[in-house]
Length: 173
Image (cartoon, rainbow, N blue to C red; front, side):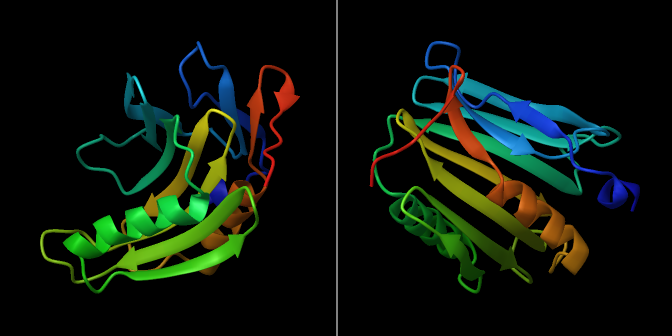
């Protein structure tokens, strides 16, 4: 898989509308990816990137950036809500926290043999900004990510950070 061997380059994805200027920076290789879908409405922005040769209705991998503007709950609380929603659809979903600090939380979930759902494995990170919570995630339609692929994306997620204007955002605990 060529994209796994390519050195990571800094890729800046805007995750908020232009009025807030709070963004999340994700060091990832953007070659071969395109915007598959996105929404930008008050309180929530969502961008879904897929391989350039795929369609949003039939993708194999997806990188998502989501901004929950005004969300003041902790990343752990937001993750608990996401986990509850997932387990309502797929009760046997596997879920684990990979890393956590006062302003962010990295987690992984996977589903297999879930009625009406394709097997998937996702690594994701929630980052608390001053204007809300950012969610960045990489998912693949497979029961389990390959270890090298998982490591590449976990590294990119862990190196991601929130900025506002030209300053890195620091959130008080």
